[in-house]
Image (tube, rainbow over all chains, first blue to last red):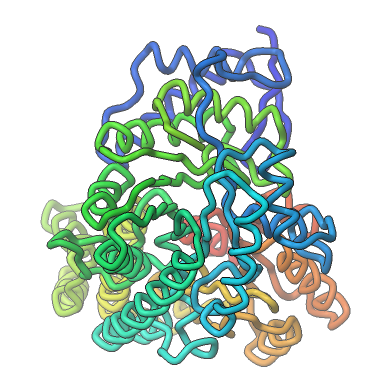
Length: 355
Length: 217
């Protein structure tokens, strides 16, 4: 049987037969459906993904009229990061110019402005500077403008922050102490997010992005939900995008709830319901890549999770598609064959509003 | 194996999944009284229990606090069995030095791996996050480690894992110590490229690989 070039989750090229690609898709959807307890993909959907992943063309696309909104999280940082050995493109320009590049040269429908630290906590002492830069960038751009950063509750743990690290306390068997420490972190993070988001919103930003929510598990998620709720009360018209960190919420606290729902273990179709309730405007589910499996296996998982999320959601879904997420391999610059295949498959089957 | 013995091994497994340390101790004592060897109680009772806990954790059906309770139940049950082992069968615990490399303050994944390793009977030395390369080497030398595990969550910090390989060679320890890498940007290909002995995709995989590296499986 003829062999077709395929990619693995770590970006390696391998040769597979059409039957092997299909088998990977079937196994991927079965794995995701079993984990999230959602329906697996139908025969037609499996065939559609298989068709996309076995085409010989280097790039694929949706048909005209089926395009979706494209945004870039942390975009302004990725252009210039790398100058000092970072993981960006290494083009030495400021964030204002980077925003213009994204809008005018790279086709971004929504631009996101972020600081190199990309976490709310370190923005607090430099908020005044950030407000000035946001105002100036708004004067030279027209696309919807998000200011984004991560709740990143890890930064509230010692030595970077004031709280003992819950994961270290847990490893010492100190469950009660770990939970109390985590609850303190949440309170402080919510205060920081609301303070910073208020300042940036009042400087003119169209929206606030809470990116990589859940990176510190259920504590991170409850902080993002609570901050959203407070911001919506304060500014009823504020737009808030919430992008996630993984396919389910890791239980570091394990018992913490929002609106009476235990957060640990929630998959994206359950996460989005709480996000809606808190007042989130756009939700970005995430499914991380498994590097030892093929991209076909990975995209089947992504689509199985995300399709259920779209179905459950009443708000727009912008799926995270990029390095290491959304069925795209772990390359610093994701290969175009993998990006376009994953994007086409996800947009067409999940009926996404954006990527 | 008699039905009574099989039921007991099943109960040993359940005691771990239900995080019941007292039950695990009771079952261990009962099993020994029934004439089941300590090694069998551990390998066919408690180990399948902690393996299932790992699987449930991996699927988002069980969380860190429960994992810790399961680890404590495992420790309670296995300590009774180990005390009953003949001295000739008593094996020294394998030692793992683990940390997140310098410049990288992400430590959740590393901490979860620590929990899993402890639950599976390893002696773990967690040197924390943002750990200078020298700390990995010095700690490994100090405790006579079997394995060094390093975590990196950034493409900019994963170079630290390569430096561990280089500095282990310079210190003349590379043949003595096995190495394993993990973290979001890492892969089997990266492990091979820098000369690490293994790559772990997640915490469950880390336990499997470290057991293999240390001759426990």
